[in-house]
Image (cartoon, rainbow over all chains, first blue to last red):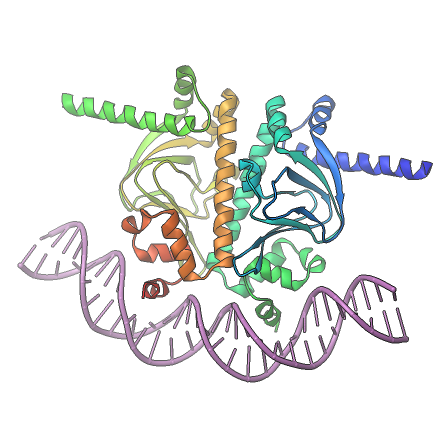
Length: 201
Length: 201
DNA sequence: AATAAAAAGTGATGTTTGTCACACTATGAA
DNA sequence: TTCATAGTGTGACAAACATCACTTTTTATT
């Protein structure tokens, strides 16, 4: 029990450090500043198949993924599921429209693996930006990168066929293919799993 | 000449007011603050068919569209043109990847109509954010909205067929159909102009 | 090791979309 | 008005992709 506690504390410090390094890739922080930042987050663990966000629910948090893997899913009117985004280590994820506007979720966020996250409530998100100007800058950078990534995906979707998009995905996120079933990659690429299955041949 | 000058001044004041109202939709500014903001911008006029950005060139500016209409174009390796975005009144546009990273443009930005813009250089963009914290917040909001719009388009692309996407586009930007040829709407939607032409029937 | 469940592959077939060719219409400049 | 050009429509055909049904393989669980 003593040992377990020590290990947990050690692990927790490691996770804290991950968040700090993630932020400091963009803006250096003093120890005091990071301590202040860190008070705005809470920690949570989820098991594979658990939902962080369910369609129709309020979206309390934006999530920073420490470890594990999430899928952000949009379900269309024929109940077919489409993957808007995968979120892996070091990614921020949420139903951002619902989060920013504080409305009900139109998408769901579900674990593909056991996942550890830091949670940032909307209130703490605002407080944090007010408390520390550096964090406003950090979130601006993050948002810019998010936009550029989305634009890149749009270009892929309008310029390339299924096979090309699959190859681009593998090039951009090679680790994904070992971590998620191909049916989910198909749902991300916007093709049927059968078509994706036939691409290799 | 006297009258012309008066009209010009009047028009210029109007454009200035447009920018101010655009910013104040997100964050209220004092007169002094807006005056400071405004010093960071320069004004430019372009004629239809002129390029604001050409592929391969350095991207000096981010543009705020006062009036007119632009297309942001990605040209693929078969020389086919794809429309990444239309930019109308009150929109910000640039090859943002090239702008933020100060690298060469991979896309071009061209006038579909005579267009008036305020130009913000990368240096002034940084200065402005440093000079006035409110503007950092403004750009964060803009970036967030940009991301949400892009995500919405991704969902449209992976969940809907050509006809549905066309209907969604018309619903979102009804004015576009009067202002741009259908071949360009096709290039935006990611379908051939022939397919788009056959959708109505 | 046995079994159930999930994931992946594949054939047959129909639908959607792209491509090429050509005709028609609208628009702007001389 | 005349002419050139840009935009649009449409037929014929080919390619890409979706869907349904079924089999095989892999993975997880007991």
